[in-house]
Amino acid sequence: MIRTFDRTELGLFTFLGAATVVSVLAALFTEQYYLALIPFGLLTIYVGVINFKLLYYLLLFTIPFSIEYSFSESLATDLPDEPLMIGLMFVTGIFVLTNYKALPKGYFGHLLLVALMAHLFWIFISALTSIETIVSFKVFLSKIWYTMTFSVLTAIIVRTKEDLKKAFWCIYIPLTLLIIQVIIRHAINGFAFDDINQPMAPFFRNHVNYAAIVTIFFPFILLVRTWYE
Image (cartoon, rainbow, N blue to C red):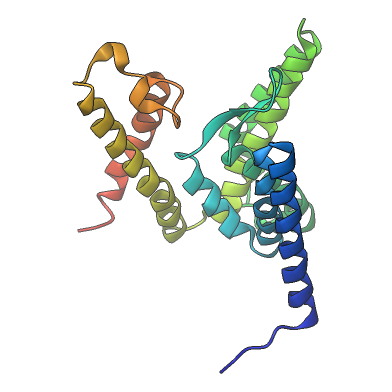
């Protein structure tokens, strides 16, 4: 059976198509090739509005693959996970304001959250007294979207064992693929320590970042071994 599009769907499709053409042409003429990603950004926003849970799991999937990107000497970010965090921060804020009962009972009184809020408050106070005020407030803002996404939103979405399984596999699969390619590239160099950072690029700044994410994730692998025979 052939499905027909309604006027709203057709309008959205036309808008996205036009935005794609315009952004690609703008990227070619200005040689600012990141402009070609605008349609993906618009599509991501749309998905975030209609199904932010899907966007959350997409964020988890992109964490291992994300790379550092500098727009200028004073502005850098991680792509694509940090823009997703910022978007989900706003989605989370709106959702909590309109559905405050979605959070687990006693969430705001939990000791870990109280400690996290105290940590954020101290960063804010430190930013006020900092010599590099702008840099310090950038750090404070980044802490907010990390907290909103990985603390508040996670508490809303990851509520059951099945939810935790989904979150685990979203990170485990891409991370495992990256570990395999790092080992292969490192082996080609004869596992030389003086070239140890080269196989990590561009997904990890250095071998310390690589070791950190592998070490932090390893306990979850031990947990998952108890889930499956």
